[in-house]
Image 1 (cartoon, rainbow, N blue to C red):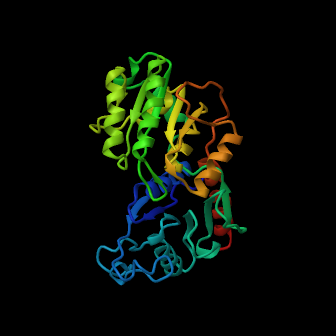
Image 2: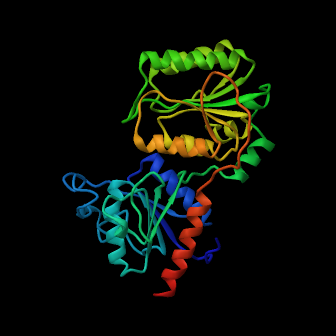
Image 3: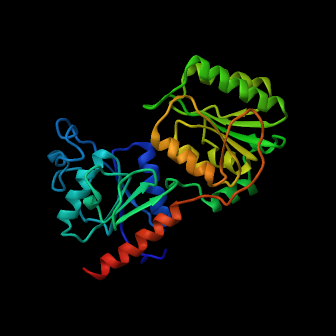
Length: 324
């Protein structure tokens, strides 16, 4: 994945953390240091996206435009509101900028030079790459560094350890009172068996779930990130003998799969066919098992699609450059 040192790049999103994080993961895998561009189209332009034009207020010629030239060699984008800006830059650069869209743009495979989608999506084409897991920034190097020099808040926890990645309510999942009781009961069983819990919550974690999890952590002298300072998320994954993850976030489960340790998944109420397909694929790969309140053993080859996607971009970008 060697690109010329002077290769310029943008990451274009509307600022959503998940979208921007995936784009940055790909840029880093390519060895790029991108300029992060965040678009903020107003109504009614935002309503028509991804099909309509960009907000004229953000056109390249306007002051403080997020897509002001000089245009980059490579543009990596994600999110419905970014698609129109990808099209605009492609035209404005006269086809010179190589464009990448992560996730189905909803406007067809021709929306960019290369499109990545998760394998459970239906979009396919000669310029579409599909992988089981999504791109992320959890690299073997970062995991190794965290194991070699763990933060003091985790270093003293006795083994075995379980990283506990708690999500929350989403468009397709909901933590009911019964779900909270079931999940925390299983978590309590795991802690009572002598496993040190290393917990991080999400912005989406409902207060009732957060309070119940915190009570278990306190009772068992385990660790929970309090939201102060840097989240030791990578260290949690690096030090874990198993990872407990809630099924409301495909990204969270995909990141856990980079560890090679068992992922114990708790499914709250609701669900979606795409997340179901992801979990089935990871189960077939030996990575995922249902969370039953106990530590599971058994390693598998760590799954990380970021490098695969980056390799495909390099190949397509070189071909693109050869035709300019």
